[in-house]
Image 1 (tube, rainbow, N blue to C red):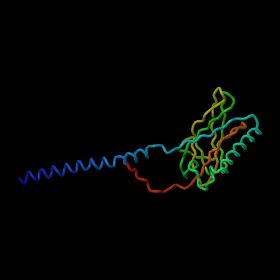
Image 2: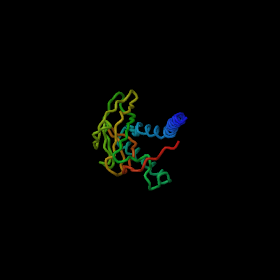
Image 3: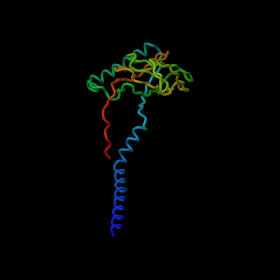
Image 4: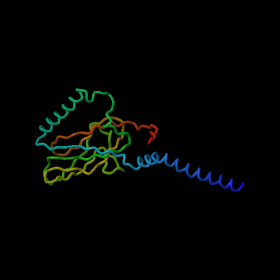
Length: 197
């Protein structure tokens, strides 16, 4: 009888360990899955810059000034009056993002060379690959279609030093462009936030 009691106790312990392990795995699976998913997902966010060729430098200056006034008017009406950093402009120091250039109104079937530019040189570095090297100005070609429009291959932008800058792309043609604002800020060393199912 002692042997059958100890055998049933042994089987009971084994079953408890087995089902306890399954229960713990079931509880932890969303956390493990979320951690695995976060580490495999790309952390690179892509941004776009729009450039439209115009006939003269004067036309480019006029249209660029109009765009700036409308941006300033939005700020004065309360859209951007806070002193905090808008989330869509944040780039953490050392992080990399991608950008594409969308060009319009250029000579059909031409290839135009564009150069990356920033208002506060040295804040950002540019590269053709995610591995770098990241340089102050990157030149890249954009081939236009029959309508005079083209899209660049993605290029990479890295926050090199803390600060604010506006990034845009220029060519030898007069153009009106949109810029992308970057606020390069220190990395956050915050503890990870647990995922609760």
